[in-house]
Length: 299
Ligand SMILES: [Zn+2]
Ligand SMILES: [Zn+2]
View (cartoon, rainbow, N blue to C red):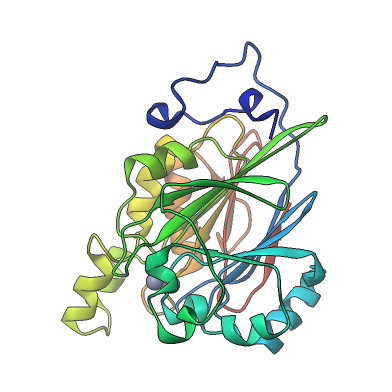
């Protein structure tokens, strides 16, 4: 894979310190697109569409629902050349076995995830680390550990280059905190899909039993709106065009609350009456929220 040395937008000095800094930053070009088919505790699936094929991240939907939503967004599922599983919670893997009945492409996860459930252990996973790097469908993929109550979960950064320029996409859900490698790899990506699971006050006063409240809010649970907003102060860079709030709790959050909180950290203002979308005054950055049953495409 030539060309990657010219497109480092990452500030993760711990992994990339030896690489030369380009004299002029390469032009940013929308080479990848993100299709969020579902996001939330009732099922997750997203497609990263690149020039050489598409990657499916997690599959917590029935095959029928996955295909129906892909069709709704115009996503060609025949282009899926790699399925990457972030962790073994059922909202991320419940559709995988059936999907694999008619899929013989690559299937990627950590050993912890692949061994995390009996039915996953029977699938032909290609094992990678939670701080690893590999190529998928013409895209460079880097993993970073997330902090969640499972064996060996990760988040993802995708990079892609062509004569038109470079593109980058970060994807991180189901983590109680963001570690150093996560912050380094998510920094400055053009499209950032970041968990914004709950409003801390709604969670504290809401219907969950105390033990579940503690789990969700803990270091191995889920990022709150405030935590995501705080991270955005560091993660948004000059190339960042879109931030998508992910894995919103249906009980302990609202799209308008998540977007408003993320907007406050980035200088964005309401872009519609309901505050489910926000934009910076110069139009460079848009903030929106993915839904459990509202498939969406980020170009
Ligand atoms: Zn989840
Ligand atoms: Zn999870």
